[in-house]
Amino acid sequence: MTGMQLRYSFRLYPNGPQCSALARAFGCARVVYNDALRARESARAAGEAFPKAGELSRLLITEAKLTEERAWLGEVSAVVLQQSLRDLDAAYRNFFDGLKGKRPRMGAPRFKSRKDRRQAVRFTANARWKITTGGDLSLPKIGDVRVKWSRSLPSVPSTVTVIKDAAGRYFASFVVETEPVTLAESDQAVGIDLGLGHFAVLSDGAKIDAPRFLRRAEKKLKRAQQALSRKAKGSNNRDKARVKVARAHARVADARREFHHQLSTRLIRDNQAVAVEDLAVKGLARTRLAKSVHDAGWSAFVTMLEYKAVKFGRDFHRIGRFEPTTQVCSQCGVKDGPKPLCIRVWECGACGAVLDRDINAAVNVAKAAGLAVSACRAKVRPVLVPAQRGEAGTHRDGQSTVVGIPGL
Image 1 (cartoon, rainbow, N blue to C red):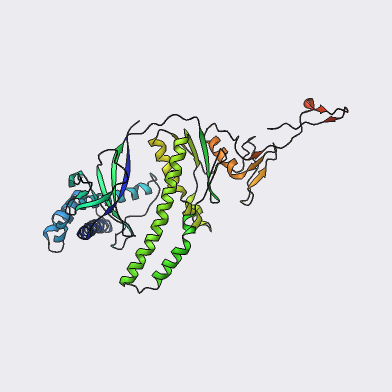
Image 2: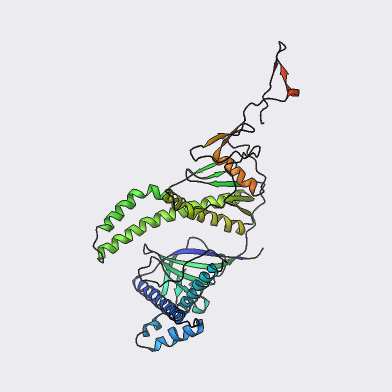
């Protein structure tokens, strides 16, 4: 197996001067990004070729520092400004690849604002940043920033991105090269049916309740948002109230992410192969179930399953969203037609098995992925069916009868 790149994020606690230095770095990177975007859009409007990255670097960084209007660009690391131009190149490349069908479509690059919820700057090895012996993160023209280390890095990181979120928290995101970790072979395979009533139903019959983090925090969020709406626009009190709302949402997002990590790690550790269904999340997010769909966070969970399967040497399968997992009997394979969501338990018209809708779908997800799963612990209740004529038994009085054969 080849190595893979992973991100490790840690909380930063900069002091007052360091927060000011980081604010300058965010602002300078944003200005260079917007200047480069304006230059390219002006060239496009004039029918000219896009200026190359090297030319933009010379005009907007090297020569701009010599002017009175942009002299303050020299107060931050030049690597931060160069990486801002690379980010714009990546944004244009993703946009054009989406138009060509090479990746999902995304919007054209837009101008950044100082009011954006997320601000970030990236330092590469050329910036000569380092982790000090005392455990601080030493950044050029910013200083030694205190880091809350929750775990050790598996290897020497190649880059570090400093991020400030909407709640005013700072994070350091390291990119590291790691080797896949091979776990002990397991003879278990599992199919997963994701839903809203239960977050996940497994093909072995286990059901994981949906935590509904957003729904549980709605009352507190409502009060915080009402307090925000009462503050005068542009006032300091409004900015403080906005941070309170952002922190409340951040707590919900953190709790959801922790739940996804714990569940995905457990499933990958206990099973050799995992199969999930490719859900149309964007379509469901436009229905009346939109808030519940976003609260569940299916896409983030499936992404975690996928990369953890690669990391730990497990098999990951994603079946098509049009697979009729809820219409096919997992016992005999007969397609019984679509059923409304109000029907949670149904009886197969062919074999007579009484099936739990979600567990039956999870078993079918695993079978569609080619996994050999057993539904022995699933809530499937066999019913009595007439035996064949050759298998008819008799009572003591000589009267014929039919025999119910369990398991059919």
